[in-house]
Figure 1 (cartoon, rainbow, N blue to C red):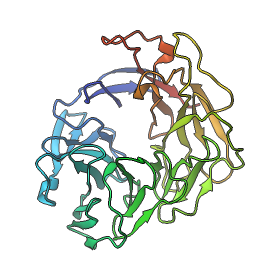
Figure 2: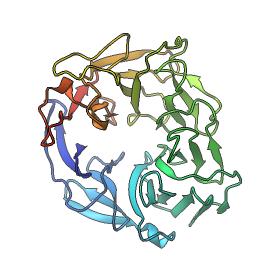
Figure 3: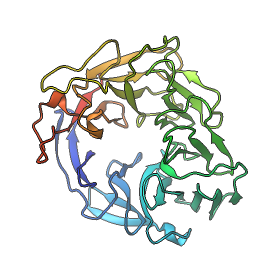
Figure 4: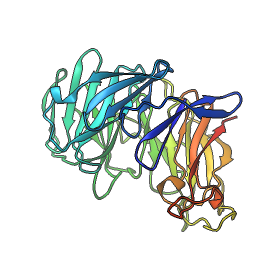
Length: 352
């Protein structure tokens, strides 16, 4: 299965036939689960989310069409009346869940972890307080206070990646070792968004070359290693990328996949994107097993990247690593919206 976000901030659920490469609408839950629910890593029929107004963690059984409540954060930590919440990620064993709560993106302040066995644990990034039903409690020792743009949980369930809100989004992000009071602040090569494995984090350095991606242990952010060593410094133009690692294994050795785009592509219907070198406007995956630095080049994105956020190809690799789903305006050839804007749609490529 997969889901697609719509322009209204909700989602539509689909069944997918991987042999015929065909999709059909499924029973999308009527109850609010937030705009981006999360599929279970253990059960193909389970989908998790958070009701934005009720602020309740929920579970949806797609095979039975049944919704059930998992946890109520307001019973663990005091929330403000204007606060809403959304589930961002869960551990690979489906035992820990991460939600972000607060008034709005970039002003959110609470990273909330629910453990099926131990209950709740939370970190208030604006006050520095950590509390809940398990683990050490108190105020963090470093004088770092910030609001949240986004947060993600490592597949091990042991670390959170916290992205600062406001100015400088994505720079100087923080990692919290959940079972402790330890925080690790990224001080070097911290640009852009990153993806997490079980014990490592991957993302662009923001230096040297657009695809100068680094992998580093979540508890030692200074120990960086280039995924593609030896890249020459880019001159002038800079393309962008979006990483996905949903297929990661416990050894963090499965390939990390990504989509790239040039923000100066032509915006004339049917005109091919600009390409001056490898990996531009492509769907690719990079070797992560430490044996080499191979890049698999699977497809072109055929997008101008000139028609809003989703035309800059946002993609996700399937949990089994067989498919990559991404967004594209397909060189402005998909027709127009009622607002007379070129449409963006969703495409799936088989990684073979």
